[in-house]
Length: 320
Ligand SMILES: [Zn+2]
Image (cartoon, rainbow, N blue to C red; front, side, top):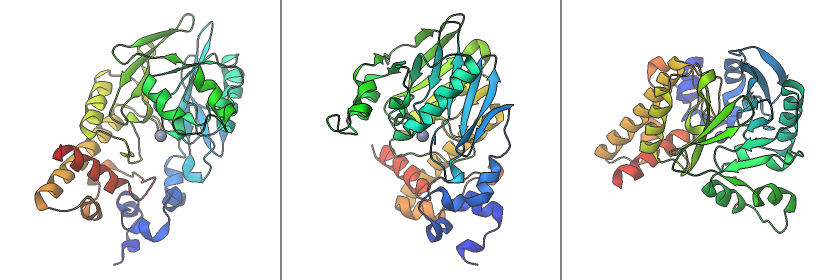
C-alpha cells in the first residue's frame, strides 16, 4: 500500500507522508476536509466562499473562515461583539478585503461600523487586513504584537499598512484589560504559548471566549512560534473557564468535548516528541511515524509539515 492508498479517514488524520505527494498547502485536504467544515454549529447569518458568520449569542457573532475552499480572504476566524456604544471586531483577518467585509457585517448585524479591533497575535492571517477598517477603530494589541507586526513590513514604502499600527492602545501582559462597549464589557486576557504574546477576548456572562490560535478545532495547530508547554498551560486555563462556546483561531466552533479532544492531541504530540528524543530520532523521522490518536475523529493538516514542526518545537523545549 502506498501512502496515498489510505482510506479517507486515515488520509485526513495521517496525511503527513501522503501530503508530500500532493501539495505544500491546504489544497491537499481537498473536498473531504472542506465538507468537514460545511456543517455550521450555530445559525449562519452570512456566507461567502472564504467563510461564514454564525450567531453565538445576543449581539455576538463568530467568523468561521473556510480556507480549505482555497479562498484566503479572511483565513483566520474572528468575531463581532456589539455593545450599546461600540462594536468590537476580533482579528484583522488576512487581507484588507477581509476586514472591509467584516466591517460591512458589523454595520449590517450590529448596526454600526467597528469602533474597536483586537488582534490576538502577530501572525499575518490575523493581522494583515487591519488597514482595511476605514472607520479608524481603536486597535488593541500588546507591545510585542505591535513590534512584531511593524517589523514584518517596510513602514516607509507601505504607509497605508503602517498607519493603524502607529497609534495602538497597548494591552498590558500582567492583568486582563476591560473594554467597555456600553452595557457589555469585553475582557482581554494576555496569555502565551502559540506565540510569545497571545490575547483572548472573553465574555464570561455570555459564556463565549475568542481564543485566537491558542485553540484550533478539527485542524492540527501550527507550532511555528510555539512554546509547547506554555500552549498546553494556556489551553488548560481556557478549558477551566467552562464556557459554552470557544471560538478557535481556525476550524469550527468548539464545545467542551472539542476542547478535550484538542488537549488530548497536544498531549499526544508532546508524548511523541519525548519518545523521539529517547529513541534518538529527528523531528522529521518522528513526524513520518506519527499519526493522531484513533479516537479524535477527522482532523486535517493545513500544511503537511505541521507534525514535524510540532514535534520539533517540543524537542527544542525538552532539550532546554
Ligand atoms: Zn492563525
